[in-house]
Image 1 (cartoon, rainbow, N blue to C red):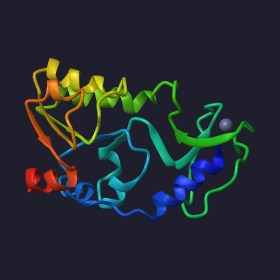
Image 2 (spheres, helix red, strand yellow):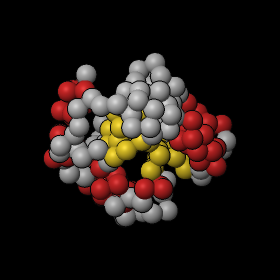
Image 3 (spheres, rainbow, N blue to C red):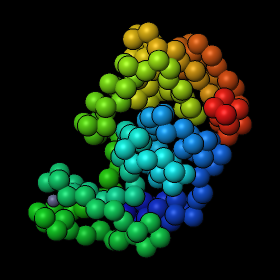
Length: 177
Ligand SMILES: [Zn+2]
């Protein structure tokens, strides 16, 4: 399995932020809550503190036994499976696997932000993966507006005040400039 992650790491290392990433990075007042495990928002220029990775980050390894050890990996030359230097358990990519609960702090922070948000931009998601999709309901229930950008109608459509159909690389520069 580590080979698959390391293959993905190589692809991410070679990827460039797209116009949507770059547009978001030009707005430091916006907080980003992402299900993506890559670091393209950060590489586009978003501050680390303003990006919440709900499903973890492939750019790091962490201790599978949750002793607290975490370390960045070189995406171009990712390491093979190796033991945790702190407790001897196995290290693994710091991503959330299917069936695992989301990391606690990012999730709580995301809930808090979605409750307080005047407006939530829901970008490029089918909104079918829970609990992340529940954040849209949270903003609506708290009186915030929901704007959905997606290439096709989705589960989020019914919650949208405004829905923009098309690629986010098309809509975001127009919406936020
Ligand atoms: Zn450990």
